[in-house]
Length: 294
Image 1: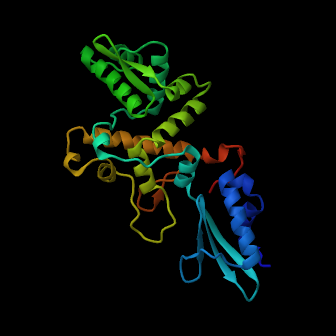
Image 2: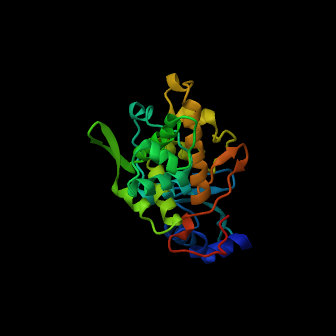
Image 3: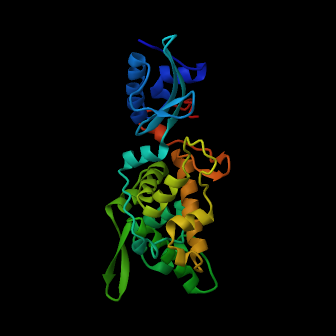
């Protein structure tokens, strides 16, 4: 048997993992520690550097150093794979077809107004002008207000929160089951959680988050969230300079920043910097206001 060691802060987390890690990570971490305690090493281990081994799991990676002479295993760190954990939790698909995505990228970047638009449609406000006006948009011409209502409907349609059904000569929005759940959500927190799930299932968002979420790479070339990266991942090259590409890429960028801040997926905003998070990951059955989520 090998003794499991760690610095005091990490040892406290390992002694009480339910307080510091999501439940899926706790299960996987427990398996890793049992094997290390028994064998002192893990069969499927990546050699992270000359002194450190890495166990790459589904929801986390564990870094350790074995000492067979002393009969000890020093745990260096546990890194949660936030993006992969969300993929497991929300059953996110990776289907991607540029032909379907080019025309679909929205130009409406305010999550609160997306939720409000669903509530308004649920209340019967379906006309583009009335929807735009009720969302607080103003303009010298009626078509300017209508355009904002159309932008909102387009975002909802791409997130599969509404479908448009023909009524006479016009297409009228109708809530999908997911859209109805958000519109009828009993509080903002639930509405945001359901909206995040819809956004994560939108292919451009997931592809970008996967690219910019924090990883344990030793390389200094990890992608950061900026307009160029968004366009590279979400637009075919021929359309990256299109007139609306800047507004559309800004929408995706703002959605991802909001998702990261609200949900707990660390994303790289600039070289060496990661956006601070308010982890939604830890709230599934592990609510603890004093939990250390570093």
